[in-house]
Image 1: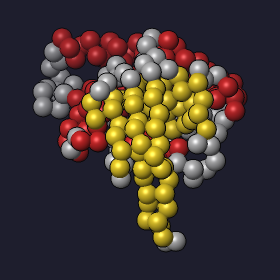
Image 2: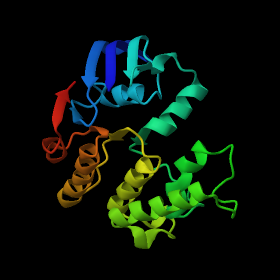
Image 3: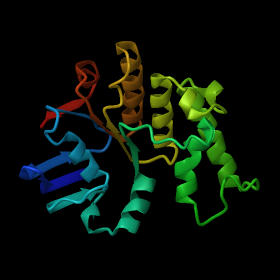
Length: 225
């Protein structure tokens, strides 16, 4: 469960202080597929950035499974996020010198960076299992034939599928997606949202920020900022 309690967030701009969130509270139960809508600049991306621990609020608390993530330092938050949160940003953020398959495995490698790297050529049993899972995710998302390609060669829809697969590789409890369908057709949008619905039906919490009415209409719950 995610519990946001009286969160405030202010930014300093060229025009002075701008308060994005004021005494904002929200509870999101496990397994919820939540859509967040609102005008541009209203604070949607800021809100999910706070939930993901990429920023800290000026005041208030954010609890994930009763842990106040606002009290974690950067190192602790990074480890917590990599284990518990799959974050799909608006930017592709792929490493172009790696293949699709290797980019998919990056979160696993970061999680186990103090252990043997999956690139070492000597895989443990757990690494073999994660590679099988990666192959399965690519297959389920319909891009298994692209595993050895460079990310720059993928289409918009293929990029989104890779981002989703990478967000799922560490089996996080929470999936956060920031405008994941903005560059997609209506057909591709429905396909991507159906994937998120299946993920939430597995008991995972999915938080979707979107301006897309089609995408939002398929969410289980919608809030407007």
